Length: 247
Image 1 (cartoon, rainbow, N blue to C red):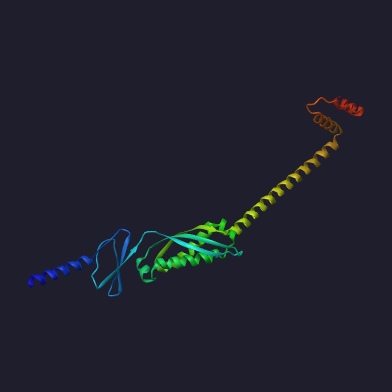
Image 2 (cartoon, rainbow, N blue to C red):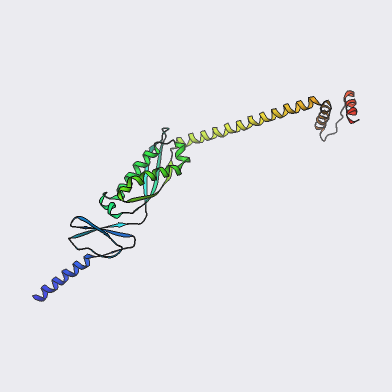
């Protein structure tokens, strides 16, 4: 009977010791509560947690990558888009992460969703498509301020996709085509303006030098003749003027 009782006690003590020994990895910390009150943060390595008297909450200190589910956003110019993102964050204060917020992973997910809708809703569609770096920084700064009290550092936010419906894609394509046509017309008009200016300058030069008009006339006749055999009749006045110019 004594041996049975001794064996039972030894088994209980062994069970308590096994249950009391905890091993925390390098990236883990243990938040210890003693009789319901916060006691200290332990780890990494081997730690002892007294059963019943003490409880432990494990906290991962590695960078966590969290996908933000697709959100329906209405831009400032009343365009409906679907946007999703990814958030990079890590716990820097295990005590706050456990005590100050319930289920900090879920809390950050909900906060990221509402912040994403709020920030993007203040910008027009063109800003969402062309200024993602600025929007990423704005969202990251807001999340970081909000989660500081939870002992969490938001390192980065990246908007992954901005999806438009089919009708909006066609409208944007039509707008881009109209913009290209407008630029082409502006370039063409600018070229015509420059050409007209050069023609005016050339006319002024020719009017100041009569002989230049005659030479231009000869050049025009040569261009008309081309490579074909042609007979060109020169006016007598033109021949006289050319002789005067040469002499």
